[in-house]
Length: 397
Length: 140
Image (cartoon, rainbow over all chains, first blue to last red; front, side, top):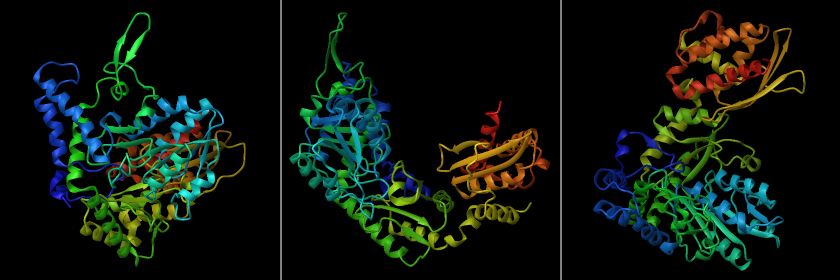
């Protein structure tokens, strides 16, 4: 779908590393170019024409985000990416909310950015991190979560879609459970928001983080959405220009309103504008159409790969466009080098989920991750290359 | 060395590497080596007596290039003096980085003389050497 919108796809390569970052359509690149070529200026400080255009374009992205995920624009904070957003939640909110003896529920399929900040803060506060066990197919269920909850459980933090296995978590039912048990629900949407419909107001999610570059937008920009009453209690983790109203010699100061108080310094203006364009682009295609295309491609791949006996698939039954596999007896990185030899970009490794090995018995996998611009022909090519993988070492050595 | 022979040597050392598996012995130097740019992760241990490399062992997860390189390196280093090993290290690293080097002292390690054509694999061919360098430097 929509391949003509992506100039880079003219290079003849096959790009299957969309969970790492997606390609950028021309409209996003053009929107950013336009800022640099026609109206470069800083936000919130200029009275000249270019500054007015910049302000309008920059501020409007909050409206675009809020339309995309159904939230209020004042709940939308610009960040540098999902990692930044998650760190803001942990060090700006949880630092003042959690006490020694409290419990935070994570799981071993989470990305580093949804585990490490918690570990660091727990060293300071002394709350306990507990890991919800995954099912036999490495997915995470509400039943398993419930078994781990105690009266001390204050937070559940997880990804909408995990980045190695690609299992889609039932955010709605987990959110309802959290709400009825007075548990804060923090969601990493980096792998979910670009691929599936999400309704913030209808979700009982308290904080939602995602990145621009995994959804056709530029790198260096992301979003944190938070319930307003929680954002009122959250403290900025960075202070400086643009976020204060006044500061005096006697150390008194006043911060600007939410969300601006969380956006110190000159932000990534072109990138925010680019992200707005990317979201408009995705809404135009339709997020349900995007998800359906990924599922179609994945189903097609699984059907075709069935009769290749040396390919081990780890996540056949999940409802996303991520395929985790290995060529039997071959180190994941050698497999990705092999695919690269044929112009196919995939990723090998633990994909920043370094604890997942405890659950899987293997440390590294090869990951194919789809987006809507991938095609059946590309999958045919991958299948052909995998079919010939018995000769892998003749190719890569 | 023709490329068929090189491939055979690399493949054999990958499939059946020399001295894979660590031992419990406090007389060994120990180190871990991994790369920021790939997923290779290897532990090394080395025993030196009277300035001679008596043993090197390794274990961990790594690609065909790293694993085979560790194996060939181990065979090449055991029995040599620290000075000889340092000289091989210098020349080998020069070879990988496309600088001048003396191929006559590298023996089977010459199988990697064209690895620089694949820049994303250079690190793999350097990791085991970095480990030995690190352990030798710890003696200073």
